[in-house]
Amino acid sequence: MSKNKLCLVLMCLAWCLAAASCSPPPERQVENTLDARETALNTRDVDAYAALFHPDYQYRSDEVETVTSKISKRFNAYQSIHISTDNRRVTFEQDGNVARVVQQFRLVTVDFDGERKSANGTEHFLLKRQRSLFRSEFLFYEGLGV
Image (cartoon, rainbow, N blue to C red; front, side, top):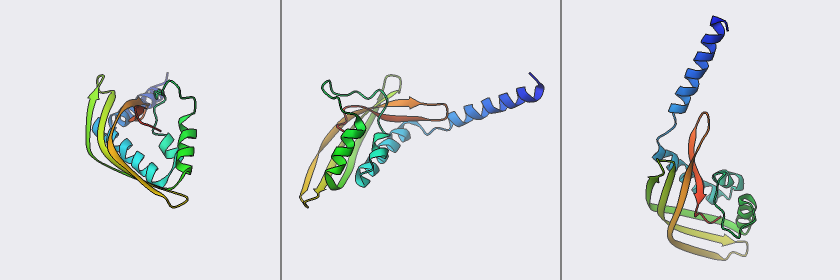
């Protein structure tokens, strides 16, 4: 390998390592996912919401429908959806690769007949770290009803 090619390979490797180390801290990665979930729900953006699910997402044993099809049906049933959350607690497990989230939520929906429904309570779910060459993020893994 020529000296120029070796230098180019080393520079690319250094750049990749630097880019990977620039990922936000795990706490911020979890917050980013949770904020993106609220935005996707409030805008009824099926693709943005479905992108928040880890490839290893744990379905209930009787589920056969995909996340995207379930989300589409749910979002299409409402004229508007609004969720807000607070009192969030995040803890990390499995060497920091799984985040356990417990938070309070308030959900208000309006269907196409104008009927308004609301629910509030406590959510419990897990997010699992998904790593790629240039980034790391936490995605929904278990416990979140689609």
